[in-house]
Length: 190
Image (cartoon, rainbow, N blue to C red; front, side, top):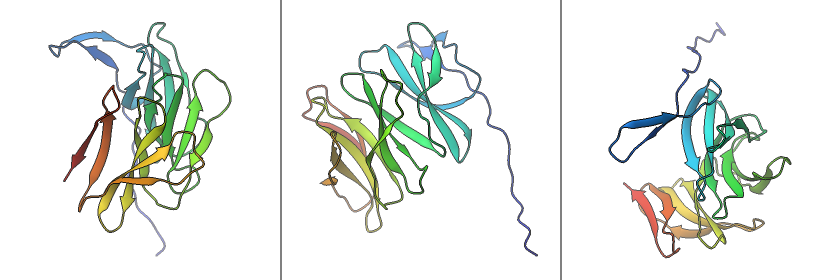
């Protein structure tokens, strides 16, 4: 008949709470009401980027000053803005956004009011940053591969280049953090 039925509900507000090493709630951050899904704390510990979701297809990045408790929008594009990863100097954030269709990677200088800039674009539908090397030279990216599920790639942090394959397994391989000395990469695999 041309009719479409669907279910929709508003996002539930969440609370950001610090926990101590024993798992006890220690303090709550004073954030604007919203549904915060993930957080990435800067290497210097002064700021955090939260993913604030308004629906399954819309989210924005919010920058939080952990000392002052202030929060402000960081990303400016529509669609999903996800997987924020800090640069080792705590001045930039790379993230994935699907504002133009496929997920692409963008970088934002948190010390500058200018909007984020595109760092890497491709027609591979699902990709996202997972880490930024300690020397600041490359960004780890997990990307969909139709033959093996997901693989780990490296992208020069300066942008303007293609991805270099780092790890290709027979199933899903998802990048994780690098060690502080830059010698090791933790990842998960099926």
